Amino acid sequence: MGESLTLTLVYGESGVSSMNASLDYDCPEPKPATITLVKVVENDDNGNALVDDFKLFINEMAVVSGETQEVKAGTYRLSELQLEGYALESVEGAEWDGQSLVATVTVEEGENIRSEE
Image (cartoon, rainbow, N blue to C red; front, side, top):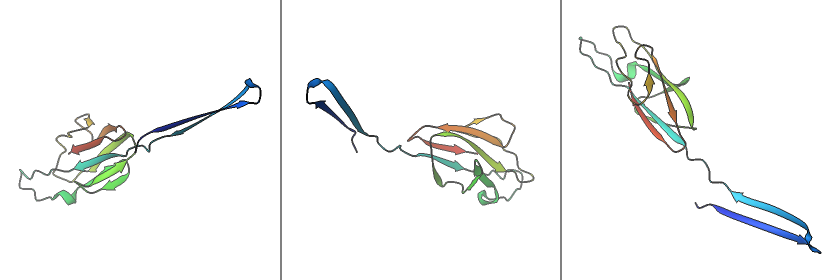
């Protein structure tokens, strides 16, 4: 959808002595941003956990690994509930301090972010 701009000027009877102006502008709807949070499980030490065993969150909203979520532009917390015997080793596509179970990501209008934990 294109943008349109309509400018209407209405002059009074005396011409320039009085002038009314109205501006009608159709703003395009903001494009939604998306975040896809993907859990990768490594069972190197005889573990048997599956991706679905980990609870993933965007802010407080529980999400399913690999499912794309539409969000408004802004900053979001990506987190997970840790399982005993497993450690979060990396978070790709987000800012992470290397220690906590929370990373942050900032998305702009129309941007698509994919983060792997």
